[in-house]
Amino acid sequence: MLKDIIKSVEHLSKIPQRDDPQVTDRTFFIDASHQGLTAIPSEILALKELEEVHLENNQIEEIPQDIQHLKNIKILYLDKNNLRSLCPELGALSSLEGLDLSYNPILPASLLVVSCLRTLRELRLHQTDLEEIPVVICKNLHHVELLGLTGNHLKFLPKEIVNQTKLREIYLKRNQFDVFPKELCVLYNLEIIDLDENKLNAIPEDIGNLTRLKKFFVAYNNLSFLPESLRQCSKMSVLDLSHNVLHSVPDSLAELARMTEIGLSGNPLEKVPRLICRWPSLHLLYLSNTGLRRLRRCFRRLVKLCFLDLSRNHLGRCPSQICALKNLEILALDDNKIGQLPSELGSLSKLKILGLTGNEFCSFPEEVFSLASLEKLYIGQDQGCKLTYVPENIRKLQSLKELYIENNHLEYLPVALGSMPNLEVLDCRHNLLKQLPDAICHTQALKELLLEDNLLTRLPENLDSLVNIKVLTLMDNPMSEPPEEVCAEGNEAIWKYLKEKRTRKIMATKIQAWWRGTMVRKGLGEFEDLLKVRKKGKSSPKDKKGQKAPKGKPGKGNQK
Image (cartoon, rainbow, N blue to C red; front, side, top):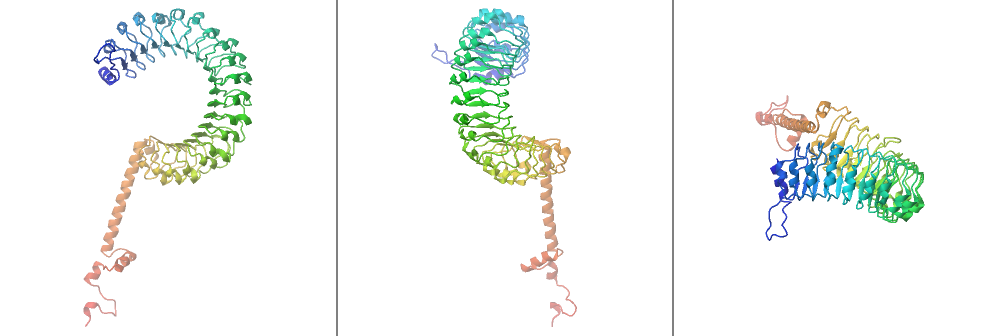
């Protein structure tokens, strides 16, 4: 197996030596991930010119001593294995720049060898059950630019972390920090800080020292206010404050002129912060579950916005300001109280995804049909009013790839679905459908057809012509054609049943046609059939042989 792996990558890894006039075959890169390996093969360790090795997603339990022979290795990925300890020889890899040991049950004491890797620039130790970072790592490694520690049990950082003056990215998501680690505020080269899903109550004023900070993630904490000094992080472009307890955002943050993405979902804001309208370069805006009832008039200034999440609010109507956002591609309005869409909705000419699930539409909102670029439409009604039909004008959405209309009261589907060439997913679960239109068999791009919990008894006889179907669900339907036991066996059994039924029907038609023809030729057919034959100038076999004349009329052969 290993020889096959090496052969498959050799054509990608043959690089000419700078000093040699001839190109020599040397393997610099190998990917042996996802191979079920329980040990690092000796053949890999013999490739002494290797610079990058991928061994992630295996069951490797130890690193052999011969790892020291890979003197030129720069990148080594061993994440998602079963490593419990690291051999001392790992510290001899003097050229190593990137090491990933994430998702391994490594004993903390064995991590000390990592401190010998003085050239290390990227170290990932995600989800390794760390309770603290070995101090010796912070003391000895001075070139680390990326430190990944997501999913551990860290409550603090060692004070020696301040030695990491070149650190640009640090990932501390899903740990146990209840106090913001102030040591980070003196690492002036930091560009990305991820402290999502901790227990932070506050961000220190010293955060303003990080003037190179570009991305700051502190979602799912307990923040109730933000420091004014955050405005000094003038290069900030991404700020995620979602799911805290913020009632407002300081207006001074409007000075962050480079902001392109901000997450405020899950905060009790009740109003859109005024400063948002002062970020004309904003591309992504998350305002889900913030208690909004309306938008500010100035919202229309966000002309570069391409993603807007307003789901799970209290909007009684779709704000008309949205129609001014010409670059919008994704709009989530799910779980509001919207009953009608604005007639100007068609001005969103770039809109590809629209979420309208869980609103109060009494009928299908036909304003949607003006969205020529729409690819995904979500209009399942798991609460409130239920839709009873989908208009035939759905055919206008020729770009539509996915249609979700679950949890309604639909009794039938429009024939127009058969003229939608790009439709790949159709979710009709939990409706009142009694039958499917035969036209659905023309929707050749269809890959998923979800029909459970309806009133279907039969499927269109040519449904198996949908050769791209991967998922077909029919649970909780009173099926008879095919029977429920066939449906339970899956797609192949259903397709087989439909083909056999169609074959039987064709044979029955042929037999019936042959039998009727035979009866007509023998003059034993129905009077109407014989009459049609006579009109064409043909006579039955009995006529050719002669028949007895009726009483009182001589037959032709007896005339004198």
